[in-house]
Length: 444
Image (cartoon, rainbow, N blue to C red; front, side, top):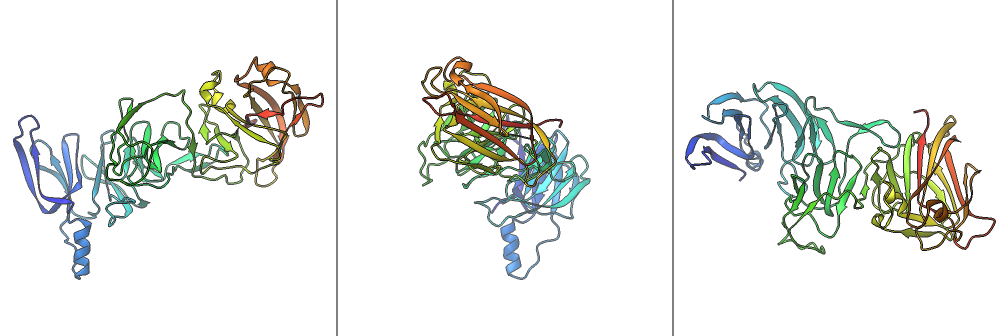
């Protein structure tokens, strides 16, 4: 059972019972919450008992109720007797609103389905909105949003939350995704945390995709708790048979200088690209501080809104270093990996031919191998125009592992961007090396 006959409020200092109230049917455990100076609760049968009645041909009781009680005295401040459903309440102190819903999950409480949400004004019980919404995670209240397992809705309206597609600039539904695994998503001010195969997260203030902390998994019960700058991960896996390298309790602090990589659950719709980055041979996607989404190419880090790129892999070698080995300039996580060889890339920027558009193209380089100036020289072409002659990364950057960016404006294309890195005609002992390609449409 997931309900109790009686609800009691105790003085936490003395342990004495201040007041108690008996239910008509049962106070649902996931629907007893405190907010402000009130206590809210659902008095109804659990779904399992309702289904038992249905199997016997009986209708569920008609006298369910949603109560708002004075937390000091237990007096009923308001009561709702119609439209009572579900097993979940949430309270927003910021907006003084009460959410009524169900508590679905991918691996527990299997009877419950997320199909409806209702929001009331908490002070009066006035109905604000009532909408059919499909979800599969206990609803998370985060400021003026309700976050579910893969979407978000406005707390004040129930309407789907939108965001700008970082590639096309169009409005698309906000979403995130996670890989397989038990437990459910929970939130802090800046972070969603959950199991996504290993321990997973989604940074709410970056909106750059789903990432992982490798080597250990989230608990069968949600255990990745962010509080006061520390991510706590007590071990909730003692009886689990999943095989992961580390089975221990641990805690993390934020270290922005470390690498992190993500994957994204939406696809490119073929509309003209406004801005994007291709991070060559990177282990995943990453959203930069300026809002540009950098896609791993070739794709290796999971789902991603990949752009079609035609290229010849013959003789191309992949190189990757850790960003901490690079001289920091804010772009070391782009420069730390690359493709070495004769490169011919045709990057599709629109699903269909478009009116000629001008782009700024920034090419990211770094010398990632222990060679000296003069040992790697190559030519670079954009749209078949020769833009770099006998380019020597180590000489121009001043050494190895130093990020370097070359910017080219007013590059015109109607559908595809052509980039070539070819060995110098004057001879070179090492092949061309390119780390990243940043493409930004001009006159936005």
